[in-house]
Image (tube, rainbow, N blue to C red; front, side, top):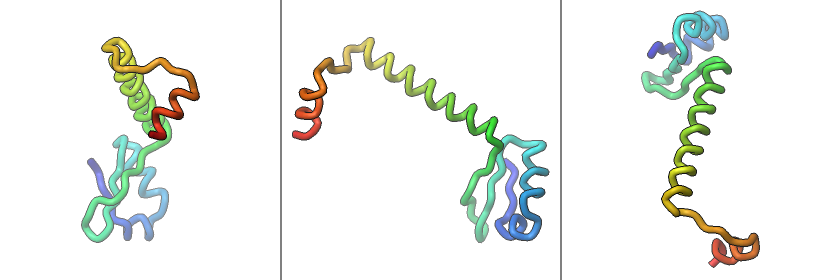
Length: 83
């Protein structure tokens, strides 16, 4: 994965990010030699969020099909989680 330093970002600004994202989906920003931040364009970010939601949906469906769920009223639910 491509990386730039925080100092490069400070000096060159957003154009340095745009340049790197033209060829790569993600860019790491390092601070004092340690990886600290990841930058990506919104399209890639939204794609990753969609993947995360799909994974959660599959897990929930698997739990439901395996019987790992509870059917109850709101009042019963509140009582169960506040015990």
